[in-house]
Amino acid sequence: MMRFTDTLVKTYEKYTHERASYSPDEFKLQERSKFLKFLKAEGRETLLEIGCGPGQDAQFFQSQGFRVLAVDNTPAMVKLTAEKGVSAQVSDCYELGEINECFEAVYTMNCLLHIPKRDIDQVLRLISDIVRKYGGSK
Image (cartoon, rainbow, N blue to C red; front, side):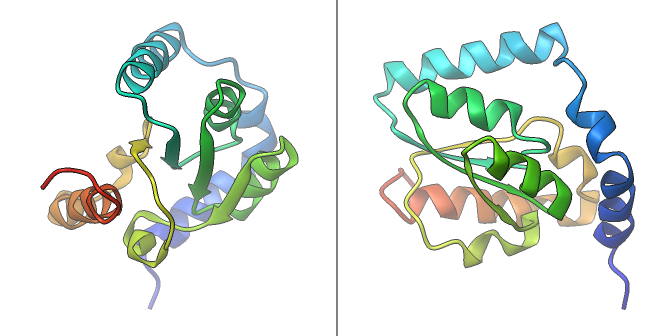
């Protein structure tokens, strides 16, 4: 049975190199900067990026001293991210429970908009669990 994510992956695979050449929008850079300030103020050291695309944000956070795991459901995007020296693996939002690592924070930019409304609670629980599992508050 074909999942909606299969079509999404095919589309992103087709445009991988084009997307990798984009410069991030200013508002995204501002949001990333705010999140960085939060992470540093809270003393966080580990970060899971969901929907990493070509790895620009993951690479940025790693350059700021964070241990980063970047995941994306598109193998070509994961390959580009890994080529930047960032730990990366193929995974989608529905498979987050299979990640057995410790993360103190999760970052996602423009990824959750692809999740159907009927599934958003499930995906948000998985995201919450991956932080809570390793010491986050309930």
